[in-house]
Image (tube, rainbow, N blue to C red; front, side, top):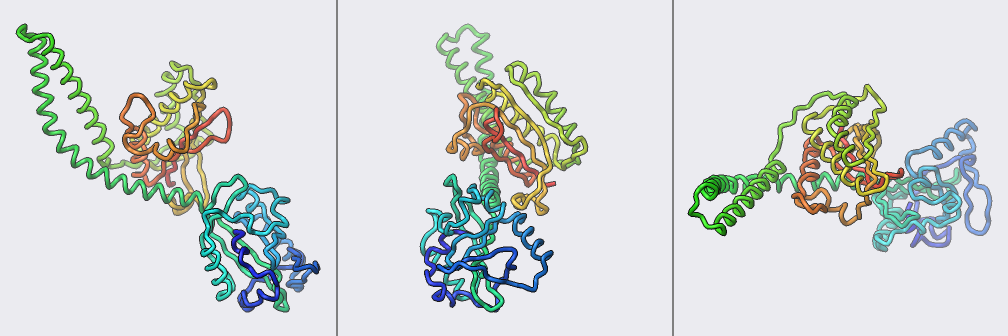
Amino acid sequence: MNGGAKYNEPRSVDDRSSIVDERSSTVVDEELVSLESGHNARRRPVLRAMSQTESALLRFAFEHSSDGMILTDPNGIIRMANNAFVRMFGFTRDEVIGQRTSFLRSLSSTQEFYDAMWKSLHQQSEWKGEIINRTKQGAEKTCFLTITSILSETGERLGYLGVEIDLTERKRLESQLIQGEKLSAIGESVATLVHEIRNPLNGIAMNIYMLEHSANTDTHWAEEERESIHLISREAKRLEGLVKNVLTYARSVELRYERVILSNFLEELEELLVFQAEQRDVKLNVLIKDDKLTGRFDPDQMKQVMLNLVQNAIEAAEQSDQRAVQVQANLREGASWRPISSSGRVILFEVANSGPGISDEVRSHLFRPFFTTKPQGLGLGLATSAKIVRQHHGILDIRKAEQPPFTTVFTVALPV
């Protein structure tokens, strides 16, 4: 619950009596929590009829909920926080208890936002909506927050219950899906344009070939003329390669889905790349934890994606002292994956490398066409890979590695 929720809250408990409609408020057991109010700290009995077993179950549900939950007194002072809340924002429990909820307020949130929040609480006795909160590290999290009033049996207001669902990962995935749709639309237009360029280019290439053959066999050509013809020929071939790569990126490929055993898929990938890793003195580690795990995708197209990711990882790892690359595939499940899988279950490929870290600026452009950090190349490898993954209704992403010696992890998430 964001601190701004209590920012403009009246200081007097009595002054706040109009905020909540007592008929629709939440009641919490005394053995779950005791809340303090004002200068007279005392225990407030709530739901005395609740049995000790029911009270224990309620406390267990509070502590072990996957959503962040806090209980505050009427002044917005936090009295309880569950494990999910502590993990979500990075503060210890001791740092949270006793704080006003304002310590979570983000610089991105306006005073008008909190005024509207409290207007809703006055009129409807609760508030629901998206809010941006601040973690201990200063990062901003987008959350779905529900604030509900807590009343005693006699209707006395004891505090508030805040429930927060972290939407940060879901928002990021949704943003990538939208960006992917935009790039796909651009790709279709580019494919039409490149096709029109390719026809005259073929005619140019044919005539240059004839001129080059003549320059190599006939003696009447001057040396400067031969060099000019050879230069034109090289540039024409480079342009032809560019057009070919752009067409590969732009055109849609009809996918041929199969049920693929992931252990076999990764073993074939390892066989194709182990020699390249050995040549560059890079240790390639392919982890296969579940021999029976399967995924449904086009194996040829996904092999192209994984080859590109692992080859890039090997080149990056070569620049480090550790020289390590790790590839694995696992089944993951969670609400954050629902933008790409209604069940929340995905197959997640991970390619980690120990190379130099990637800045946030570079990371934000990495999957865009023609963006590259390499001295050679067109910058279409990752863009093409991202497009193939999008055609599978998945996401290609990058994040910082959490386990040394790795620095960067590329992930491919595909719906099960």
